[in-house]
Length: 67
Image (cartoon, rainbow, N blue to C red):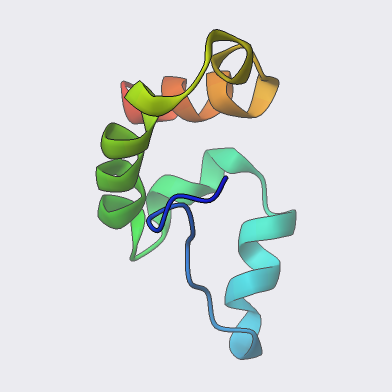
């Protein structure tokens, strides 16, 4: 949670932030910063605990990354 790469910067105006939060994870690969999200995933995933890897969010994101 406190790792310096554990964030995705989104614009508040123009709908970017809203689209990410409310559009569903399946739309994330269409975002312009998807490559950045994937890169951060590969860096951060090995640092997670088994409990964190067991969350619904992680499992859905992992499926998108390795799709």
